[in-house]
Image (cartoon, protein in one colour):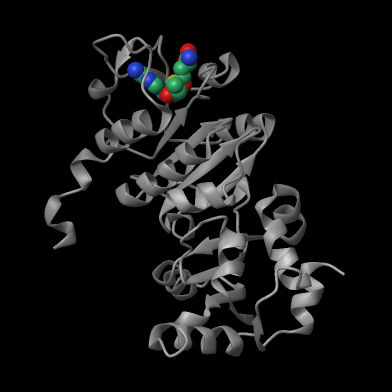
Length: 284
Ligand code: SAM
């Protein structure tokens, strides 16, 4: 029986679980492996505030786990009641179980198991002023999580994962997003599908490349939509993707480093692209 079937049988329930051999706990622990996340189409996210925010943003919680210490905590109990009301399963667990699930010595009090959500490429129809980020085979979960967080911070519309990328729903990536995985639309696309879609993209396609001849600060990003294309950590952009860009820009460097870290380079680019539309008083 799959996790989904097991959960369905227990929807709208609250159960107490302390054993690591409990079959539901075993299924949730298996979510540390991509093949189980993909099979069940779910992922884990930790932290009370993060789970509440995800709930508010309309994400479906399939299972909510919280530590016994959370009993009597108003926010936790309210979240548990909402989970039950929406047909989810609530598990009150020991700290040992939470540690095993999250692989952390000091786990957060709350963990949510959410349904994965991605957008198809043909749903991406950028309007003037929109910024999308395309990542060529990003391999590092920390980089991907940081990029999703930065994309959220600058108000980018979403991230397109091209080719064989690290899983945006792994616990490492989700942790690094600090909740932005729930705010930034994610698209997965093969190279061919991306290149075909790119032909219909009417905005500016800006690739970043160590051999780019254009200073990234000299491009006018203010008109139309921008698609920022970033290369793989080891190999940079493929020749095919580089050729599909309108401009290849470079970020100047001094010193010994060959290149910037991918997430840092993405951050530098995004803040330049969004320079004129991010006044400081926006958040006051
Ligand atoms: N050895 C790789 C190469 O030859 O491209 C280094 C890749 S770098 C770690 C990862 C990505 O970050 C690059 O493909 C590019 O998109 C971006 N990047 C890093 N430093 C950059 C710079 N100085 N100018 C433009 N893009 C840069």
